[in-house]
Image (cartoon, rainbow, N blue to C red; front, side):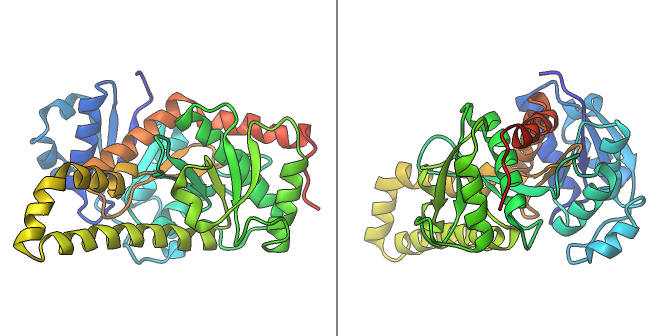
Length: 345
């Protein structure tokens, strides 16, 4: 795979340089064509590169010591976009010095910087934050918006459906991803006026590269019954954190159960292959890498607490989106809205 290089905000994330460089190195071991622009403190990055000799020839360092704080207000971080590792990584995409940017830093700041530098695609009202979530099937489900937009009208939801379906076609290979709107019930009369209006427009549309299948409730998101789940950012963020919390609850519950007695410990040894599979499936690092869809460039948000495996997955998400030209794919698909006459009443 020959791709434009990926700018990595080496200072972002809970553990910063060590994990970000280690994750990039792991991604390169899997795909030896990857090239990187590592943005951050040069001394620390070089020290981290010493433990990954194969990375030296594949990486350029852009020195920067200024870091966006995890709880820093996006408005304040935006004023320092030209001096921080996060801002410089995003700017590298704008300037054409990198094809995509990956950061584990402050989500709000990353979105603000990305929108300012890369701008929203023509014909699109707002970008959205999308992520892949595990399901009971072999394919992940694309969910958006996960926090970029607290309030969304019907037009926003329709556009999110178009972008989510484009992303899903890349990751699942389905020509017509099964797309649903998150709602409090599956009946047509359920939900807000905006959700109902978006559903009505998508049901009536012809020619869109998706199969719109109505509504999905939150407890069915991970069942594998649809490929794209569309919602406003407020509801999506709550649903995502509830899912993540439930996954941690299950793994902690199993850990406590299997260590409660000698018999339980023996039972754990017998069932270990199954529990290892469960742990792998629930590990957020295996699904790390949320994407800001709808911008004129690729920006991937890695979870702040991601380990090296998680960072590597985020890098691979960025590479895959570059390879499949997600930006132009969405631009083409947005044109289908007008061609199909999709309007929200």
